[in-house]
Length: 225
Image (cartoon, rainbow, N blue to C red; front, side):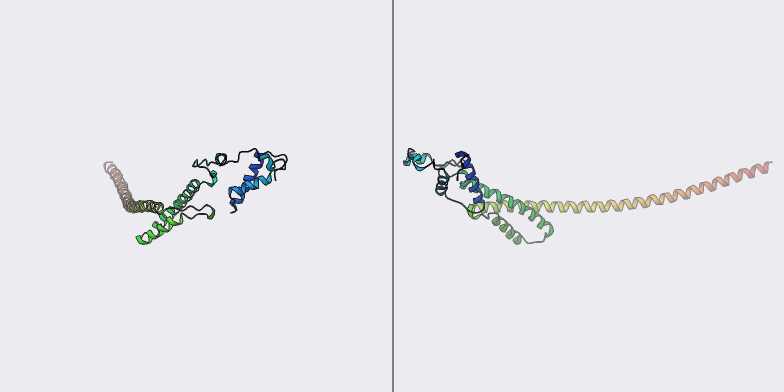
């Protein structure tokens, strides 16, 4: 019911909010029934006699039909436009496909020996699961659209597998190179220790020779004296 303090615009905004909430809960009404409900909400000052001077001929009715701002076609609003619903379904499908692509990449890492047939079946399952529609917003996709979506996903899957194989080869190569460097490092460390021991030996030899040389000098001095 329209409140005394409300304007027609305020009442219509409140009415639209209620209708949208009901639609989210799964309850929808045709446009004719919505118009009747709006008329019943009007106060007594807005009786049918107030509309007697309004043009009611067929040509006038056509001019007053609602126009969709999405496709610019009459007889429905934007929120009821099939084109808009289809765009929303494509958006949901793409989001679903992106999530599944990440899962496909994980599967390829965890089980690289899985057969091509199993991968094809899984990809087909992903492509067809991506087009699940809500009952009240059901949009039917053509076979060509599904086929294109499947082929696109499969190509991306093959690219992911190819990149994964390349990364694995690079990882193996880097791992082998690391092991080689570790072996060379151990070899050089052992050589350093060997050279240290050898240097210590020669230093001891030098000390001994110095002692002998000093002893000889002392002995010569004593002999001369």
